[in-house]
Length: 448
Ligand SMILES: [Zn+2]
Image (cartoon, rainbow, N blue to C red; front, side, top):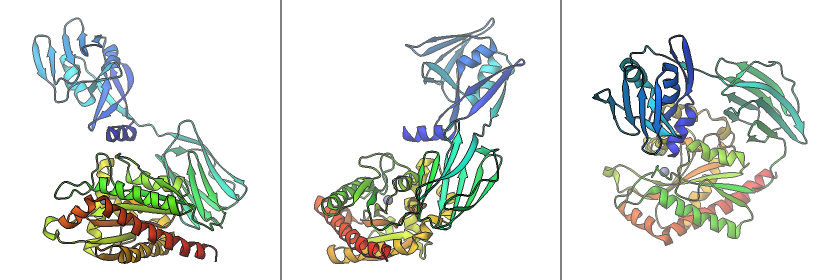
């Protein structure tokens, strides 16, 4: 269901349907990659009677010479006295019958002998105003718009690039204030790009229509975001005896959260605390929006059948993969993108130019080292060391961020271990010890 909703949000398609010099604008519902339009508006345009029985979801369309009977979710239409097969059946949504747009001309139009034209309406939302102001040690960049518009921030200490999915017709010369030393507005037809030069900024926060740049110096770790990989419709890797990676990840994450809550004075946010699907992008956003100081994603490793003997724990930070093994692990984890309707290959190349994580490259690397050192000490599975690859989930995280591949779910011995609560708890403990030691070291550096 979430997938359908996401797709729908991505495609709020509007169409203008015209007939005999009149036209109507309809908003399509996107279902299984098909645009569906409400038949009531179409019937009105064509002068066809629309009689819907909401109880049986049976729709009768009649005009002077023809009669069509349709039932929601049934791929057959009775037209006059013949039955017509429909490639996609009608759908019943919000007390209305929706019909696939692709079939409107061929099936409704031609049967009722009406010549219909359809045109997609491309609407690019408008950014009314961009304002910059300061509030204490924070510089705020604020967008004004009638309806919220999506935007993406790429950030490093000296530079930020903001791309907004809307058109901007306002002033191109904006007043520079506070930490913003220079701002370049580049308007495109369908989006707007802002290039900012920054001074003295050490973190930022995206808050609805505002981007906040902080000049406050970080001195301590206050919040960690723990990200149990996969969830919901995305099971992650599946073990030979049927253990789902998503379940093992969540269980380890919960133990880890408890260890941190009980023994460290920092806040923990979990990207998910139940079996639910969350996109890779959302996971990092949760960390950025909450101004997290550390981000840790939990996964279990897997390989092809041939290499089922591989075992052990390894920790990754975001950087270009050096080996085929590293590349394969990232590719497998990035495959979750397909649940968002993104082809992983299109995106992977961007990862290497990630401004946010490049700022934290060294710290992320260190963070990973602490986890692996701890693994050597507390676990009796092999420690495979610190690795690097292009993980989408670490992209854009403005804080030290790592991904732990806890054990190989594809290895029968380790799958058996991963089923055990005691083993999950042990892994969580090992990660917790690594985090604890890393924080002490990191805070020392922050205060120097
Ligand atoms: Zn995974």
